[in-house]
Image (cartoon, rainbow, N blue to C red; front, side, top):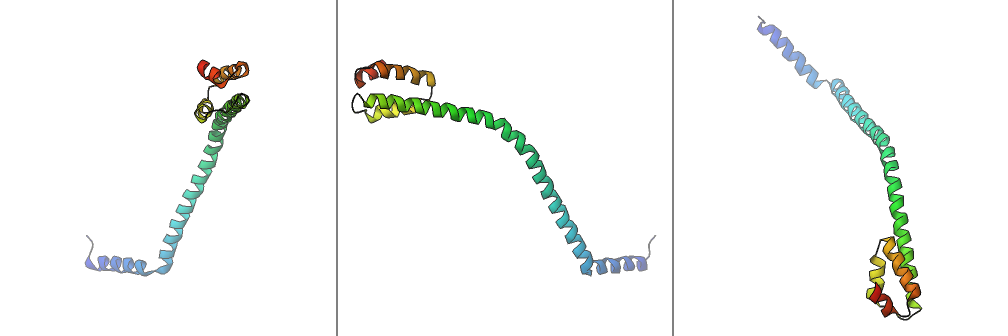
Length: 125
């Protein structure tokens, strides 16, 4: 069994270690190291994961943007053709601009080319 003297010696050593600034600085340095290493590994993982994610997202995004741009151009052409027939009502402009399906816009474009009036186009839309 341990005697009181051994316990007292251990207690004094613990107290000394608690007051030792170098030891405290060592723990702080270790904590900073662990934090910086975790941060470095997180960045490394992010870079490793980001490239494949970006590549997998890029093609669908580009296709979607191209489709949207194509639809927008067709809508602009429809409105331009109608403007040659007269004043295009804002409601009709908004309806044409809101349409995103290219097949619908292509059909409207054909109607706009053949229409003799804006009203005629509207009745066939």
